[in-house]
Length: 247
Image (cartoon, rainbow, N blue to C red; front, top):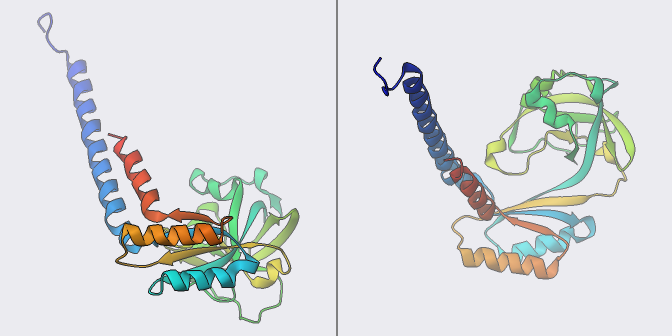
């Protein structure tokens, strides 16, 4: 080749660079469309965290007054850490990277007598409403598959300094993309009988304005200053800005 001419390696590098830029642009566009399109249509308006058990009734009444057309969903919530799988310390269990996050740090936990409305069982069955046997747990199907769990396996979690072991009664398909209330693990109510805990709630109200959301936010903040309120649209805007910085 003549002096000063672009060598094949330089041309290849430029080609790969342009390909990467185009790929990032496509990813950025797809993420933006998904975040600004389907997610907001299905997502709740607000998340409310750390509602005290003694305040659940009055909190529900306030939301009913401020958002009479809205749908309030609420669940008990505890924090816990997975300590063992089938009696083996999690530090000694080898799991694929994609499922390892479930075993790291504290997890949000809940309990319920009934199967969550936004979940479909893929294996096993739900426990009776009056169940009082050994602690049972419903596990997210995708995460359970990644970790290598099966029906009948046991999971030990530490809640408030106490280890509790529950047996997997079923797996369920969790629609994380709805941005509603979802948990990897849902336990039978007798698992945490007597344990103090707070509540989490979502409010879904369509065709609301920014002023409506501000009014609800102010009302909750005044009446329940200890409750953490997250406006989902604000959170999505932050994600959109972060995605925009990829380009």
